[in-house]
Length: 255
Image (tube, rainbow, N blue to C red):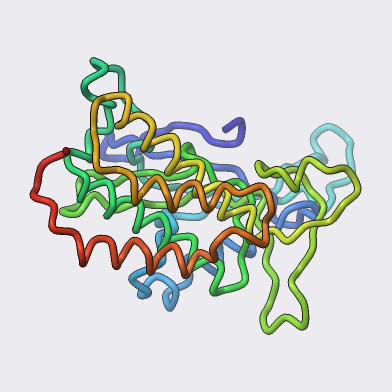
């Protein structure tokens, strides 16, 4: 991201710093991040927002160059730990390269974490609007390879309850978002993004010779239907994956 920079803390460990506008009229990123990183929100097991280590406030001193400062110039520097990206590493075709997945069970549990992360956002009335693999991180230092979601620059918050589904008109990665001047419901857009992550990862493992992925492929394709109303809700996706894990009789092998 052009707004994210690597840095080092005092111990020499790598961290990432993201600049976030404090009073932007075009982004709700600061308010959403503050909501998701509150002490109460942090206690929720399904909150997969990347933890914030520190927030630094900055207001440039434009007096030095003879320009009247504006309150909207204020911004935050959000400091986060470095985690691994959810992207394949280079390797032989027999190994898709995701170092945290070795079996179909691993793949199901990882998909379930993504579904839980997005379901938690949707329950709060937050549409992420930029669901893709680069916006999920893995903490491999934890015992369970915990997944984190990042980047709320395009995210939108709709306080509940709603009389009708919210409608928006911004760029997003789903078929309905490419129709000019036609507002759409942003929550099925997130479903499409999750389904695309599933679809791409399943394809990587199918190319590597993995079988028995039909049930996962079915849910991924249902999430990528062109008609938004025909996609399952994120609650339905989560339930499907939980049932798949509970009823699966597969052994701890990738095939």
